[in-house]
Amino acid sequence: MTKTNFGWNFDNSYARLPKLLYTHLEPTPVRLPKLIRFNSALAEEMGLDPDALNSQAGTEYLAGNRTPEGAEPLAQAYAGHQFGHFTMLGDGRAILLGEQVTTKNDRLDLQLKGSGRTPYSRGGDGRAALGPMLREYLISEAMHALGIPTTRSLAVVSTGEPVYRETSLPGAVLTRVASSHLRVGTFQFAYSRGSDQDLRLLTDYAIARHDPGLSGSDRPYYDFLNAVMNRQARLIAKWQSVGFIHGVMNTDNMAISGETIDYGPCAFMDAYDPATVFSSIDAHGRYAFGNQPYIAAWNLARFAETIMPLLDPDEEKAFTLAQEAISGFSGLYRSCWLDAMGAKLGLFNNEPEDEGLIEALLEIMHRHHADYTNTFLALTFDRPEVRGLFEQPDFQQWKLQWQERLQRQSQSAGDVQERMKGANPAVIPRNHRVEEALEAAVSMGDFSVLDRLSEALAKPYAHTPNQAAYAAPAPESARPYRTFCGT
Image 1 (cartoon, rainbow, N blue to C red):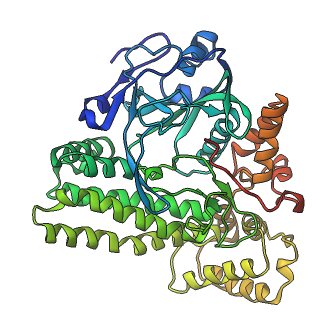
Image 2: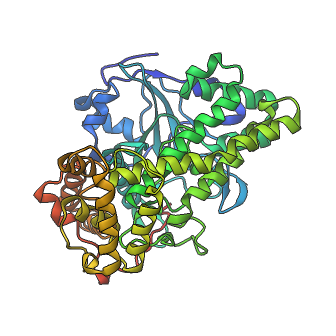
Image 3: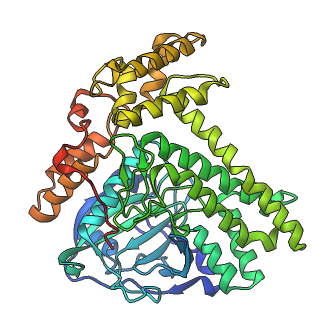
């Protein structure tokens, strides 16, 4: 590990895994790098020097024109089920510089996204457009502010070079930070292409990195499977609680760390409808909002298949153990979801009827096309302003049942409201607001709209007056909304 005046403190443990899992490769330099966005607070958390990086010399590193001292750049190999179909993939346009070890001894991957072709590019140009990279920066940081585990964004650098999609677009490189970039698809690749020893080395590495407490377990691989399931159950429950739709829950987009990864065709729901799909490529609604918990279980079953050889030497016993673990996901997720949704309604304890109470509200919201975020806000502050929802007889009857439920708690009305304020964001990255900000930035070079939106999203539970302007649902002219992968 080497430290310089930029604060680089790299270790490269992934580069010590079997070479099957990666290819050493330098980023492809860009013509005219310019720093567009820089996350000073995150840089400080990582032990980096914000002033040194927020300079032309620092920009050269963030663009991939120079390699930080101590880094061992590589592109990771992985596979994945994309819309249910298995294929070999890999980092086609991303280079892992290495692992920054922070002053707290945390280990964080530092990856350049849009940094050029790799052996896994599959015919792509290895580059990224400015709009999608700004989108990932904005939404990943908003997710972090919402308290949802996520990869983070350190910087966006424009390249001074065009990328060609349907039209010519300005290019960019995003610096992404993650607890690791280990995916379900990483294990699928090792299982499909490697030996049992390769798979064991990868799994031992993942345990050491994310679940070191399991090293002394009598059955570490079974416990690791359950740990991954636990993280995913909590993550998906948090997604559902704020109306987030990932859009492309392929197995290569499920991180072992339990962090949200890859912000391609993601969006946030306005009117509540479990069938909501925004992604232009999800023609059959596989990854619709209401399907996300089921897809998580499906992905985890694929993960369990990959580590079955490690669960038990006897194939039948290994299958039984894997099945036993995966069968518990539904109940695990439901428990996490009830906790998250209960907090949104100010509940401090659990009663058997709570699930029915929550489901009844969602059914009423669906029936009346009520805005998801604003309905819970209106309940939090007792403001009957959600497009007439509060005047509907079915809602009024439900509200009486909810109030009776609250009265069975020992907490005061003030305590209930504080709990709800901490679970119901005043603002989310409304899709039309995100598009408005990106259009101004990319087409007109006006970053002030993005700045103001970022500021409003930075403290979503503050419930300040200046956030009200960002709480309105999309106008009819902005519907229907569609997102694209933006690759």
